[in-house]
Image 1 (cartoon, rainbow, N blue to C red):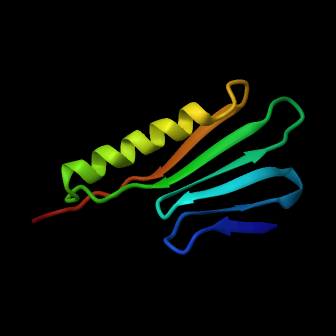
Image 2 (tube, rainbow, N blue to C red):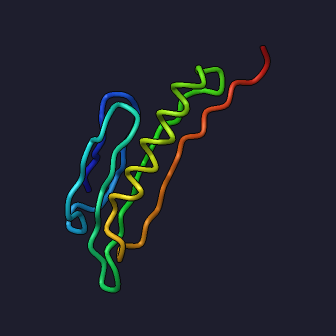
Image 3 (cartoon, rainbow, N blue to C red):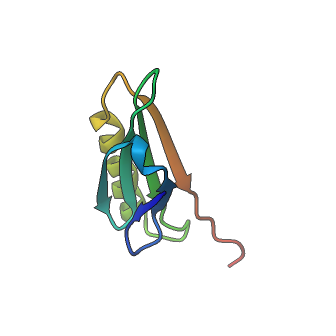
Length: 90
Protein backbone atom coordinates (compact mmCIF):
# COMPACT_ATOMS: atom_id res chain seq x y z
CA UNK A 1 0.00 0.00 0.00
CA UNK A 2 0.99 3.57 -0.66
CA UNK A 3 0.01 6.87 0.95
CA UNK A 4 -0.09 9.86 -1.41
CA UNK A 5 -0.80 13.44 -0.51
CA UNK A 6 0.57 16.78 0.54
CA UNK A 7 1.40 18.41 3.85
CA UNK A 8 -1.99 20.13 4.23
CA UNK A 9 -4.14 17.05 4.92
CA UNK A 10 -5.21 15.95 1.44
CA UNK A 11 -4.31 12.35 0.77
CA UNK A 12 -5.20 8.84 -0.34
CA UNK A 13 -4.16 5.43 0.95
CA UNK A 14 -4.17 2.96 -1.92
CA UNK A 15 -2.83 -0.23 -3.41
CA UNK A 16 0.14 0.90 -5.51
CA UNK A 17 -0.31 -1.76 -8.21
CA UNK A 18 -3.52 -0.03 -9.36
CA UNK A 19 -2.07 3.49 -9.57
CA UNK A 20 -1.45 4.89 -13.05
CA UNK A 21 -0.51 8.43 -12.01
CA UNK A 22 -1.15 11.04 -9.35
CA UNK A 23 -0.80 14.78 -8.99
CA UNK A 24 -0.63 16.97 -5.88
CA UNK A 25 -2.43 19.86 -7.58
CA UNK A 26 -2.14 22.39 -4.74
CA UNK A 27 -2.43 22.56 -0.95
CA UNK A 28 -6.17 21.85 -1.11
CA UNK A 29 -6.45 19.18 -3.81
CA UNK A 30 -4.92 16.14 -5.44
CA UNK A 31 -5.90 13.72 -8.16
CA UNK A 32 -5.09 10.10 -8.83
CA UNK A 33 -5.84 7.81 -11.75
CA UNK A 34 -6.28 4.07 -11.25
CA UNK A 35 -6.39 1.05 -13.52
CA UNK A 36 -9.22 -1.45 -13.26
CA UNK A 37 -10.34 -4.35 -15.39
CA UNK A 38 -13.48 -2.55 -16.65
CA UNK A 39 -12.65 1.18 -16.74
CA UNK A 40 -10.01 3.52 -15.42
CA UNK A 41 -10.93 5.56 -12.37
CA UNK A 42 -10.01 9.18 -11.65
CA UNK A 43 -10.33 10.38 -8.05
CA UNK A 44 -10.14 14.06 -7.17
CA UNK A 45 -9.69 14.64 -3.43
CA UNK A 46 -10.24 18.19 -2.17
CA UNK A 47 -10.15 19.99 1.16
CA UNK A 48 -12.71 22.78 1.07
CA UNK A 49 -12.24 26.19 2.75
CA UNK A 50 -14.34 26.67 5.89
CA UNK A 51 -17.70 28.38 5.60
CA UNK A 52 -16.29 31.54 7.17
CA UNK A 53 -13.72 32.00 4.37
CA UNK A 54 -14.22 35.03 2.15
CA UNK A 55 -16.43 34.65 -0.91
CA UNK A 56 -13.55 35.17 -3.35
CA UNK A 57 -11.56 32.28 -1.84
CA UNK A 58 -14.57 29.99 -2.05
CA UNK A 59 -15.27 31.03 -5.64
CA UNK A 60 -11.65 30.35 -6.65
CA UNK A 61 -11.78 26.97 -4.91
CA UNK A 62 -14.91 25.84 -6.79
CA UNK A 63 -13.55 27.11 -10.11
CA UNK A 64 -10.39 25.11 -9.48
CA UNK A 65 -12.41 21.95 -8.72
CA UNK A 66 -14.40 22.47 -11.92
CA UNK A 67 -11.18 22.73 -13.95
CA UNK A 68 -9.91 19.48 -12.41
CA UNK A 69 -13.19 17.71 -13.26
CA UNK A 70 -13.01 18.97 -16.85
CA UNK A 71 -9.37 17.82 -17.15
CA UNK A 72 -10.20 14.22 -16.17
CA UNK A 73 -10.29 11.76 -19.09
CA UNK A 74 -13.87 11.64 -20.38
CA UNK A 75 -14.04 7.84 -20.49
CA UNK A 76 -12.90 7.38 -16.85
CA UNK A 77 -15.20 6.81 -13.94
CA UNK A 78 -14.89 10.06 -11.95
CA UNK A 79 -15.17 10.42 -8.19
CA UNK A 80 -14.83 13.78 -6.45
CA UNK A 81 -14.28 13.38 -2.71
CA UNK A 82 -14.52 16.45 -0.53
CA UNK A 83 -13.79 17.33 3.04
CA UNK A 84 -16.69 19.76 3.43
CA UNK A 85 -15.71 22.16 6.19
CA UNK A 86 -18.52 23.81 8.11
CA UNK A 87 -18.16 26.27 10.93
CA UNK A 88 -20.69 25.89 13.75
CA UNK A 89 -21.70 28.78 15.98
CA UNK A 90 -20.35 32.29 15.79
